[in-house]
Image (cartoon, rainbow, N blue to C red; front, side):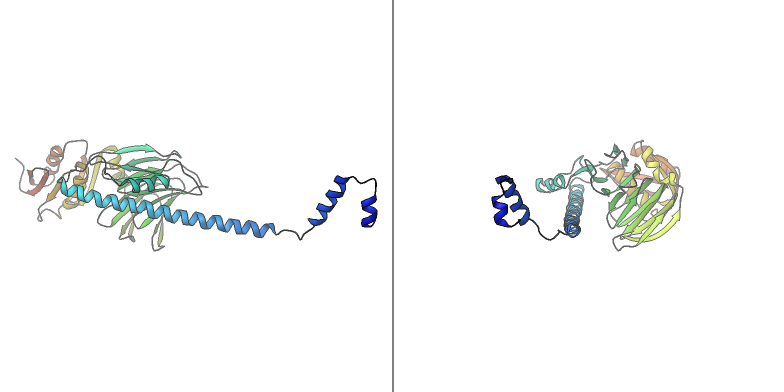
Length: 312
């Protein structure tokens, strides 16, 4: 049937003829849907990666800024740290926009909480944690500065990542303790399950239960087996000592009590063994230490100095 016959065919209505005209105009080459999907997928991945980089920059800039503020406050108030550290409104707005909340633990305090996925988190004194209201995406990521104990809810499809200064700890579901300090040293102790510690230079080590990895300046320094109870006792208000030097102990007690606690050079390398109950007052703890190490304590304001001798 030619065009003229088609146009004059009384059996075709005006709508039929219009439809045939449209269909004829739409007979194009088939669309490569696979290529379009790949291009869209690549675009989405680029946007996700850029968003992740922006989030990491914002989060760590907050941690760094807060650390600087903390140092200034400590110096100004003679080692008394306030319950909350003020940050600029613009900085906090960026943290909220990135979807993170901020937890700051004051000296002498310990905070326990549940994250949105059911993970139990216990944060020690002078620790800072940034965590989201709700985990989204392919992984569950938090940021830690200080010491935290974690019982991670199992979810193999969404690995749990703890990002710290210079390294990440990646888990599926496990119990472990992570601690980093201002002198660029850090440690991870695995209680149960399995974790992988990866440095910023892409060096990694996989831990087995009772393994402890030490890091210095973001580099893996040692890996050894330990009694995990010694490193998680703080969650129960206890401090287990197995050959820790008195100077190191003084630093930990300073963090806990919010005081400046130091020891004379002659005592700094003395090793201490035993357990301390951090629920006791600082005076009671000093008295307990003096039963292990012959010493006396002099106090001037918020500064305690441990010196050779005997307590009165």
